[in-house]
Amino acid sequence: MSFELKTHLEEIISLTDQEFEHIAAHFKSKNLKKHQYLIQEDEFVHNIYFVVKGLLKAAFTDANGKEYIIQFAMENWWLSDFRAFYGNVKSITNISCLENSELLYISKENLDKLCQESHKMEHFFRVKGNFGYVALQQRILSLLSTSPKERFEQLALQYPQLMQRVSKTILAAYLGISRETLSRLAAKV
Image 1 (tube, helix red, strand yellow):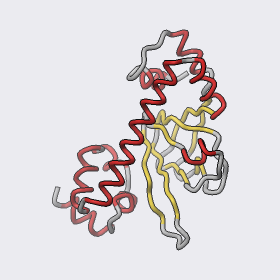
Image 2: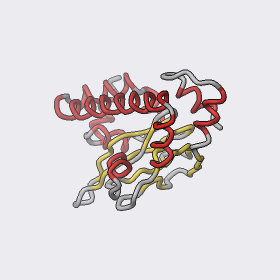
Image 3: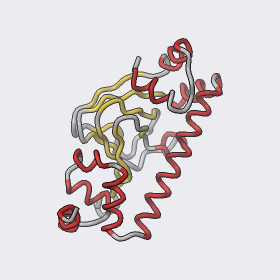
Image 4: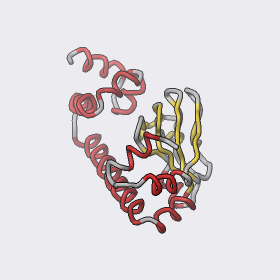
């Protein structure tokens, strides 16, 4: 299957080739083109996705049509509408490709089965879930308590490659600032 997935898993757990083959058998692959949707609002979500190659964004659109970018996902990141995936409810987010993307995905049924069979995989997904929770908490606190300048600097420091891959308009929306403010901040760096 995917060398990238094996390398990613082994950042947290050790696996024999046989164990990885068993794990890989639970995943399927999907390729999407730039601008294609992976998940659309108001649909059931049966899979979580591992990004092998590419860049995606998850966004929520309010009743007035304003889009709020929740997160990006690039190589070695996991993505889904987790509320819909774990809660068996319809999605409230749209997830679309900002670049051509190669993904691996696992269904809820296969994820549950794999975690029941393998303490290592249960541990892996618990650790990844914890990291995701911490990152989300940091993002919320940043939006609530830091200035646009501080948010921009944090993003540039933490994810410099993202700054090169995402348009200023999309970055501004993610940071909760205007495109003009982002341009001013970027010019000072």
